[in-house]
Image 1: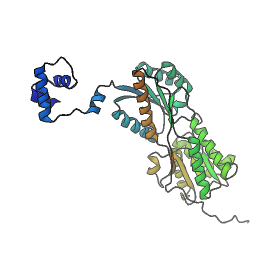
Image 2: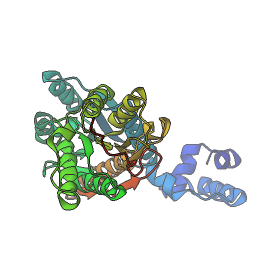
Image 3: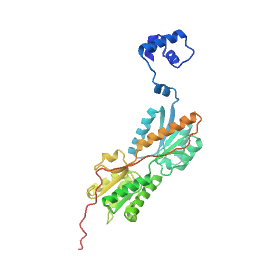
Image 4: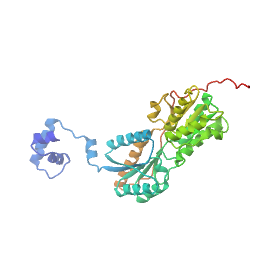
Length: 342
């Protein structure tokens, strides 16, 4: 457009007015612009014109202490879609307790067009209630039991844990330890339920001593693995509720001079970058974190555009597929010699 303006001897604004059919341009000037357009073989990009004519969509992303690997994946998804959809993104870290409500209200006061909540904030009812009452479109991501008033993006947590446990049983494991996630997050209970259901369907009742607490962080994974591997009849496999805790279980096994996967199979959940960073690389459930973040942005863009056009924008419930990714950390249990009586 600048080249057309130079050739026609007019301003780029005048070229824009001519191209958009405005009546405030003289016919003589319109003719000059038309001749310059023909000489330069200029054709407007319809997509660029559409984007340029849209008011930017301002979205907020409020997060609180997810693992570093999970947050990195989530941000990649958000940023990739923001650049494609004329979205401005405001990222805020949230504190605990009452402070979290103050920060959520601060986002509301920024007159945002929509807000995205990942775990664990998506499970905090006071924050969700505050945002719903404010009227700001809201999407929760990876929430095991989302509020029906808001849009939600996630996977079938129960089915994913069920499939991983069944995979371990099919490898031949009978004693499978399970490291739970943070009890404050609804997905933790669903993953535990999936593990227990698979054991009942394929391998009998789960042993209580094989289910140990965790908090979705590395430190809790260390404690959980030490507890499981200190058992007299220790498990031949450990299924941790996320990759951070699975990586910690591998570290404990190495410290105890156990071969992974020869002496102990370890599997995780999420398929963050950490799963490929440690040795051996983790067999895990691929929760498409970046894809869920992308879907959250797309969902809010649809809702905002509907609201701006005075159209209905009902809450959406979207389920994204998971994948069991098999790498080097799982194997059939090693056959051990029978115990000898002395």
